[in-house]
Image (cartoon, rainbow over all chains, first blue to last red; front, side, top):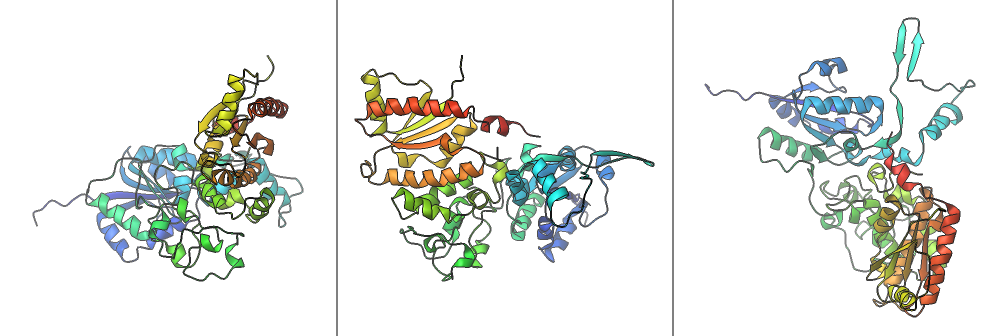
Length: 324
Length: 141
């Protein structure tokens, strides 16, 4: 009473090249969402509220306090929205693996735009397109000009396009982490320096993993998870299953490993690691229990798709971010 | 002037670098395209180093270590060998020719072999032509 009420925070959530899982992860805070909307107004969130791009364009610059931007940059619409939201937002958060390091859509960087279009509009089994029509960015019709976003050749993480204040990794980020970070912003706690990765620890998954580990990590054969009966307690690597734990930052609470699935690397690299895939290759290769070149090659043959395995989430931010 | 490839070479301190040094002190001539980086052991060479070399514009990467069984640290060169094969598979998936990455064993007494290797490898990269990694990575849509 008599106390001046704190103005409500303005929160926006946007999806670019994403699956929608990040938006759902926000809803996964369940009843705590009521706490969120008690202190914040959602001013833009395409999955849940009906606010158009033109409404965002009309907002004054810096109007939005926090934007959680999920999804990678795949086309000109994504890029436009990234730039627009950067302009309208005080704290822009790259939310989820796709915005952070490229994510699953980033695997498209193994192909070029031409290859993707050819497959999708000509070759796929369900396509009937004898005239080989491809989407055009502009087309004239009676009613006027229609346009479609331009499909880029590369998938990019958000920070290739705009300056990002914080990164909150995960596929999707753990809802608890989102809530912690959000609460910190609301309470005006000391925020970490700009460009920090938040909602994580500075360690790798292995530090948090409770499976039994020994120093003997030599294997004669690599298995894909379905090819082996996991004993539920020994380190996946020691069983010959590729687990990206050593080159992945912790913060998710090792949920996949606790669910008996090896880590696939969605939380991105630990601090000071430029290229998690290369680090993981470095670690995996030394586990090969052979000194004879032919035998080594045979064992490596069992790793079907090194690019897709070691860079499953991080291809667009890797040193070689696409095929040449 | 004809095309001069850039080759980044990682040599282990104990055998290969000493071997290359022997080539130098014996005044052997070899292709100047090979830029040597000394590392303590071929096992120290991380895949990151190799990828970064390509990213920065190397046309070829040459790794040299002690002969199998001769590693100063017992098994560093075997670790290098295993990484080499995995990297080979990976770079080919990314569209690089496997000849662009090469691993050879050079002992401290093999100055002549190193000089010949440098010449021969330079020639083979010349035939392949410039590596496009840097160009492709720098152009964003």
